[in-house]
Length: 282
Length: 276
Ligand code: SF4
Ligand code: SF4
Image 1 (cartoon, chains in turn blue, green):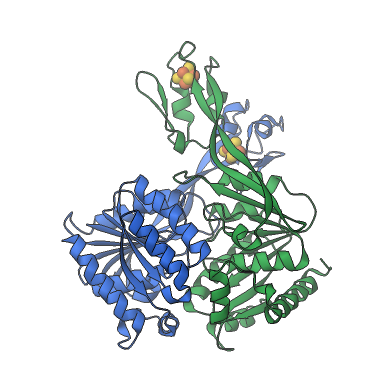
Image 2 (tube, each protein chain N blue to C red):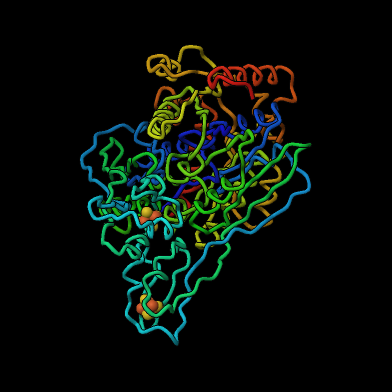
């Protein structure tokens, strides 16, 4: 059973909710797919037990001795990444087109380490995550690797909780494909509704069961109504409405999952949502 | 002059800062967050013109193909496979043209495949541009590059994608100043450090805006002070702001927030040493 928690955009409370679920589900295997800005390990703590360099990209390298500055590569490169026999690594897509047109065999493609994949042992089970090198490319492939690593720590019947990636691009597709349920966190704002519709189409495209939860629903009850109506019309289960609660901010600052705060309204609702979720996973 | 607004992570108030600043000083705004572009919700531009963005993908002329598989071997993205003929997985294709260059019989021609769109419009007399990646398309890069190619020397505020991957590097190329928006939380600090590393790597001068500030002394402010990072402004943790945002309203409609953004603007002008 793979449950992925996603949101059209970052900052909607995804990690707050993922961290709570990770905490509530003792035996699950956790996976932080947000390789660009992974945060789950900050809340869950624990100790890194394995770390591996990840080769996620290739970059062109020019051998200055062989290069005659004929500029054939410059004309070929569609990313404007090579000038006067010098490669701009930030622009290079690693496509190797330049190697094809170089008559002097001066360009070689070299592997580039774009991050690390890490296994962290937390008090609530294994967490698979990654740390990407800033500005690096290929987060989609890295997400796939992080998921593979997580799967190697459990069996098919285990519960996997995935903190997904924001957006609708390659990284989010890599984090939702093959999951059983996607819990989409929506914020009740005009832009939140927009983001929700876009990410929902990704979930529908991959034929994953969508469940919806509105975070800070009381910030704008009107949009909350719109979201509820939209879900109803599309026959999607809205399984929770979390109120705006300043304890959430406190919990983030104290680096503890919100569900540890007994009197928090948000925590109560998150526990409810977790209970409801378990009915779907049976 | 190009000013980019970025943050290690989404939801920190990047769009709030960039739309309000752009409107305040009436300069061009471009939304490079093509996975979730939201700037137009706040700026409400009129007379929107939309243009499709495509990338060139290979198409093999079966009559000319001699099945040498050179195209399959050169493709770094595994977009081509050869069974009894060459098949393209179009979503993996970056449109680089390597296959076409390597083919000895010129069997490969290229066709445009749409992956998204660029919209332009005017909010009063202010030019607004925004890119949108089609849902289930993996590659945002070409749209961002196209968007960036549409701007000239005139002052432009660039709303970047969240994160720190290649999709943020592209809008940052050629930028004169960067505004890093963050939150005074441990998460915010963690992501801010990543963003700082990125702009330093790219040698772009920058300043920080701390959003949702409730306490003066917090880990983020301390980090900035210790690291000699210029804090160019703070935005309070305020339910009113959340409500205005949720309705899609610009904060500068309210005098007190307008003052706040005016102050931020003069700090930026001081940092870059010229007026905008
Ligand atoms: S590998 Fe591709 S992107 Fe990189 S320099 Fe060569 S042609 Fe340009
Ligand atoms: S390189 Fe050209 S001839 Fe060779 S398999 Fe590819 S399309 Fe066919």
